[in-house]
Amino acid sequence: MISFMQEREATQLHWIPREPTLENYTMYFRVYGDSAEIGAATARQFPRAIANSLIIAGSVMFINLFFGSLAAYALARMNFGGNLVLLLFYLGSRSVPGVAIMIPMYLVMRSYGLLDTHLAVILAHVTFTLPFTIWILKGYFQTVPLDLERAARVDGCSRLGALFRIFLPVTTPGMIAVGIFSFISSWGEFFFALLFTSTIFSKPVTVVASDFAQEIQIDFTIIAAGGVLVVLLPIILAFIFQRFIIHGIGGAVTG
Image (cartoon, rainbow, N blue to C red; front, side, top):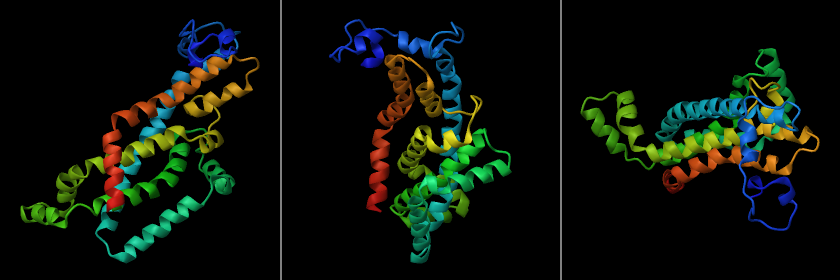
């Protein structure tokens, strides 16, 4: 609501805008404008930052779906030993806080010349999202009867053919659930994105939004509009795919 207000109105004690305006949002999409306007330089970086976030989050989602589905399928058809390995892998990845590996990861990225690139952020995000993806998909894949694959093999499909033509299409809800999870997790991540990026050529939208904290006398209504733009896409995706998310996570828990 504050993002649709003027600054003088935001200081008053009411929630509904009495004089609604879109001026706070139009500032973010002005390619040209008065460079002396407070916050204008940061706001004009938003379109590029959104594109960076789409590239990073989309890549993280694709990597999670491709490699996560293959690993989860193998583990879903293994014995308890394979499940134990996955459990240790998952718990280990979730128990390591980001701040504990901040310096080592930074040094690794610098040694390979990956600082201020999309790839550095993508690799960092995949490190923490892939174990969860494998864990959820494994549980969901175990709900698919093995007889379905056996029937495909009898009809002439190879193991890979049965996987890609029969098995994965059946598990679409679970794939969508983990895909949306990995996308939203990458989209909203801030710590590693701030650590590995320094210019607008690689900064995601969460980092650019935080740059307003360095502005002096920036209108709070403009900051509110930026916050809405940051969370808008994840909210839309959650509403569109909520049925698949609930079904996918529910199937994984049941399995």
